[in-house]
Amino acid sequence: MKPRVNVHATAPYVHSVMTVFDAAACEGLEPALAELVRVRASQLNGCAFCLGLHTRAALDAEEDPRRLDALSTWRQSPLFTEAERAALALTESVTLIAEKGVPDEVLDAAAEHFDDTELVHLLWTIAAINAWNRIGVATAAGGVAVR
Image (cartoon, rainbow, N blue to C red; front, side, top):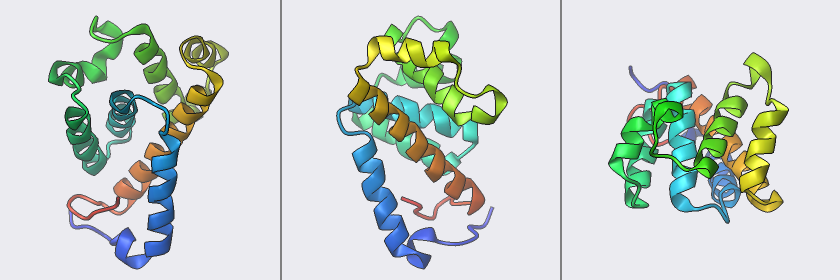
């Protein structure tokens, strides 16, 4: 699909502020965990550009390729820790929020593994990747840098 618009070139200030927001969102999170969250949200949202970008970033953060391969079926995989499972469940609930909101048990499970600061940064990271995904899909980013 041909890119529809280059968001960086067309609105550079907004793009740069979003880049700063994205970096601030994940402060204090393990880089590999932040990338797992970004990859999973990008899978759910169908954003090929972000999926490729964050898969590479996860590998750069020394993520095991087997875990990336298993990410779409993380519930059935023994490769993820309880904390990662809680983060991934939260990622799915926030990404698919219109379906059933964020159930208390999902947020409570995440709160068992992350302190308040980490939990809030996890939520902001999920929000940021969902914003990037929506821009990437809406503009058919493909090979055009949305980040």
